[in-house]
Image 1: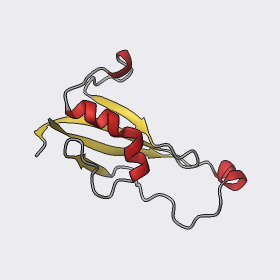
Image 2 (image 1 turned 135 degrees about the horizontal axis):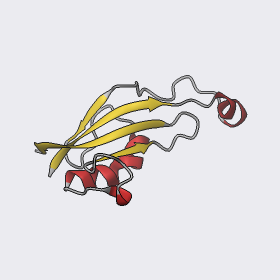
Image 3 (image 1 turned 60 degrees about the vertical axis):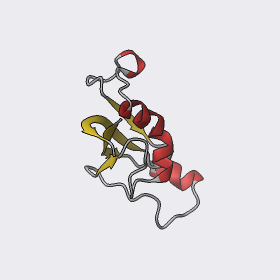
Image 4 (image 1 turned 30 degrees about the vertical axis):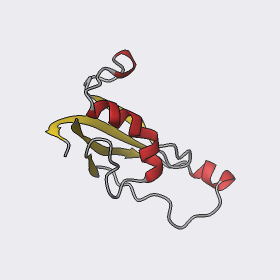
Length: 104
């Protein structure tokens, strides 16, 4: 089983939807563009949002076990995937990449 690099690529924000539908929140998301997390196989990296992990964990598990070419080649690197978290107000896009390093 391999380690998987998880990179925060972009954080979107939809203030119009937040104003109309979301209860006011002081602290909603800690993810910063460029942040990198390393999944040790199937284990959620410390500091990675649990909700985001739920959105990506199946892809991380697949990549850790050698899966490639998700959805018939929708991404250029067959050993990677671009996944977004399920926050409809401020979705975060993550690049998942299988590493050559073995998980411990």
